[in-house]
Length: 349
Image 1 (tube, rainbow, N blue to C red):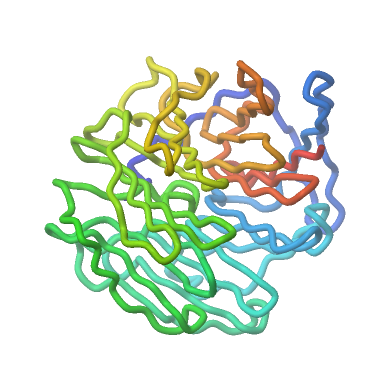
Image 2 (cartoon, rainbow, N blue to C red):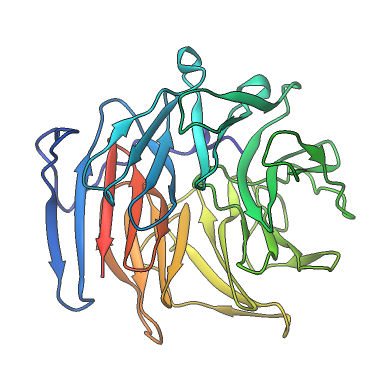
């Protein structure tokens, strides 16, 4: 779903960075949160971009991507950043999802028709191959994931068909995946953080839908058929489930609505085996959650209003940053969030 429809002009801040930090030798603005025993630091690594996706490959290597065909790499756990040679720079694509491992780098752009694309690099961004591209004006890609050496791409529905592609050859070629369910009217995903489709370590898949009367989860467990799960999220235009995470037998779903900020954003936990939903504590963020991550039992949720964190067994979320953040990813000892104003936030445990 075209997140250009998202009002990305939200600029409320509890604190403000007054300098453009140098790429080669950045200065970090840090804040110690004594209650949560974490450190939050922010860095502005470019100019004129909004970052919309992040992927941590290992303890040192991180990729972030976003508007204006921007993609940056860090090889020192986020202390310094290097701009990579991006494909289709002149087209000013919105790279709203990025996937990386030691062998390849995969970029997905979101946009109407031909602006939706997938590029693959096998030489750390020195050269790129276009492997998938939208053709019809109704084509719109939202996010990608990888599970058991198979790549999956999810896009907005076309007519009555849910748009899902898969690749079993390292994202070099793609085949449509026909789901056993028709799309509901206007049903699609939200290209807000690269997490409207996600996978577990064992290879289970989950897709989040919205912008329709009844948002739902589409779940495919390993060696099982797809299942459609009705959700407690409110539907309608620009409302539904924006981001999902899989952990053990649980799906953590996040969303809300872009139409109003009068109500808190929403977060629920769905147990696949018990087929039951449980509401998570009320979020300190209104509107909608764009991105999410789970690390060592800590749950993170991001939006243009900031980053919220829920500690294990805690009855209350904590707002740990008020910066405009769209996406987040975690490794064992830190998380990286990205968003507006060319900003990267590092959360260290």
